[in-house]
Length: 304
Image (cartoon, rainbow, N blue to C red):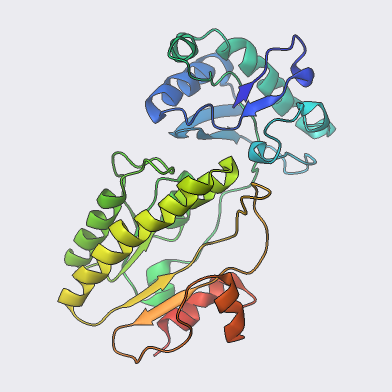
């Protein structure tokens, strides 16, 4: 994240939760430097994509109170949000140390010289343990591929036994390689895969940033560069189904996640078209069809 420069850490403000969408190459250097200085028998840093990374806490605990997502408090002083639970004080110490290490790092000096915000601190949140997921192929009988720029989704793919593709130029933002994702999906089908999960983070990211034009544009690009080409390719291969859905809402008005119901669309090339004409929250509500437990949508998607 980018923090302001008040002398006391707790007096600082989160200026930008993604440090001007820092590049993966720059972030990798910063995370590697933190690892050199802070890795020990308990803690180990792993670099990810852009501003999202991972800290492993060996024999740690989840009893650490509340760790607030930084995109929820952008522009706010952090004193009310720093980890306060006694078990989280080691984590808070890492956050404070990271600022001292990163504020004058050459990568950040170069970013400031280019008019960009520095990634001058880590902000720890999203704690959890390794997932134990059933094997996707054993559960659904499908040989699956995961395509995503986000390590969280890649992890879900790996834990469930999917093929997880590592694509260049995918960022999780509106500058991601939409064409590359579509081409990778089409190639996966041609290689014999019969289920491909394409995850696109851009609309969510634009929601967090309050970027209405970019959020609309991201949805348009998904439709034009992914849904269109992939569907056209599938038509050439035979019968197929497509499921389109967000995993949650990120309203521009509040710039964070909500648990409101989200619309979904299932298309089967062998069944007559039915339902509503438009794809949005309003028309989805009109159908009266509601799936209370999100992951069970796969049962609807795959039913004969």
